[in-house]
Image (cartoon, rainbow, N blue to C red; front, top):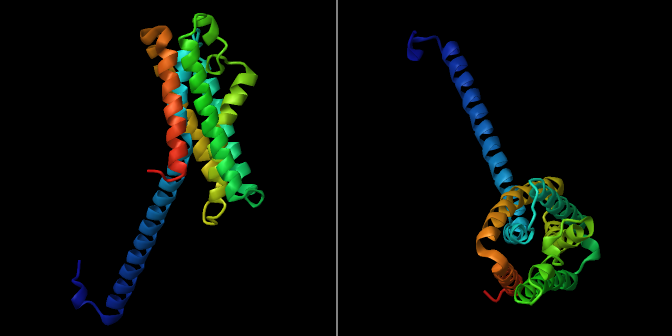
Length: 229
């Protein structure tokens, strides 16, 4: 190939212009790829932030459900996923109806319910009725009412997060909602399977351990909300 310096001036200018356009195109592609990666990570982190509770609760539910079918973790995961995604959207579009005080109320309700469920699990684990009492526990049931109440409790944080996301007009709430739902499903299903395996090893007192975790989780999130640490 003839060296560029020995080519006519017009040819050299054409080569330089072509090279410049190629560099510009590659730069634009790189910037677009970087922006897409940043957006993906941002939505993924939103999904993880509102779904981490499912790791603990899914594991504990796996311990509590004594005759767990293979489909039960998927049912639980879908319940959690739908409620997380929907509550995020409700919080986002209902932001004008919520004040800072209302967000504090939802935080108290969500964390208070977690601690109440945990305390009940500890009490029932050491009660004389043993397994019969635990079968009445919210986490041990798979019926529509119990699953809906549990899912609502788990998704109240997503409601508050949705309100805060409404302040960031650069975010697409639908992508954030989809991310929260998918991450919730991905966390809950394996957590329940692991919890069920653990349940066979820890025995009847596993409920006490799970209840203690829920109490600590609710207390931790409440203290974190008020920036105690």
